[in-house]
Length: 393
Ligand SMILES: Nc1ncnc2c1ncn2[C@@H]1O[C@H](COP(=O)(O)OP(=O)(O)O)[C@@H](O)[C@H]1O
Ligand SMILES: [Mg+2]
Image 1 (cartoon, rainbow, N blue to C red):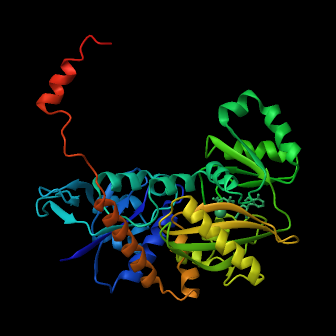
Image 2 (image 1 turned 120 degrees about the vertical axis):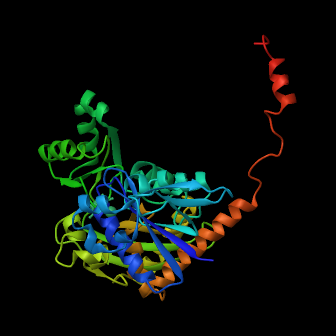
Image 3 (image 1 turned 120 degrees about the horizontal axis):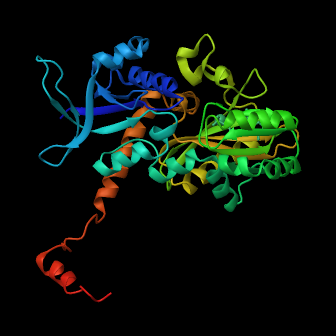
């Protein structure tokens, strides 16, 4: 039977293009595999498309043109109750096609593709999909909740405050005061974004206000936290399930600017390679004990957040004291962090195969449990019972 692997990417997200790059990397890695690759591209306007034209990076230069040539599609169940990607009939020569889904490789970055919403759709249709489930994905996308959960598990996080836009408008002085009590330099960041969008450092009150106003253009919920200085960033990826997983080697990403910015990550000359092209040291040039602690902490958080498949954990390290703080989790890291796994002895195709294997295992496990009661509450007898309840309130 054909193993139709749906590669889901794009999405209504500021990281749309980054997701296209990640997906194209995965497609290239799986090109000669046993899978039949079926693209599921969500456009910037949220429309779902399929069709072979979406398998080539070349065709993404003109997104309008791309949408005009792609095939609208959606998930549905066929007459046997199996989940399919249903391609619409376009023009007189094409015909409607239902593609039986083997698994969905989620290659989104940011927003509904990574925050559990898309994962929820897959759950609803009972489709296997790679990566974390609804909870891990949604907690992972909320920097405040992620920090609070870690704190509750005694994992160090940077001191900070958070507030919503309406609260800020009401009590600006109050929040400025709280922030200044933490002390400059401060970092301002949107709670739900990635790729350093809207993140800025503030060394005084003017810069703080400007940074906050700017960040509110991207998100209604902000985090202001103490800047770790002197800063070293260390990331580590974890692969597996909550109960059985392993950590990759650590990496030390290098930024040219004070913050590792969007342009550092993606807009350099070799940007087509995505996040993997940004300068980094792998394995990180840190003491083995520090690397080990970071790897262990990453695995602890992977389990804590009920993650699955793959995730990347980013830490802020004080270079002088070597104290490290959990900064954020990426449940669908750029380029699937393949460069970390390559250094850990797993090739990119092997990594993707592993993700698919885990998705199928989790799906099988879920379906092995009792999912519904046989009794129909709405059967004649039960309904007449409810009728009998009339007037008992
Ligand atoms: N508390 C902090 N102290 C120092 N630098 C920080 C701090 N928080 C974030 N940064 C810098 O800003 C960058 C982006 O912030 P991050 O929290 O990772 O958001 P994003 O999800 O956009 O990547 C980090 O990679 C780091 O360089
Ligand atoms: Mg980050």
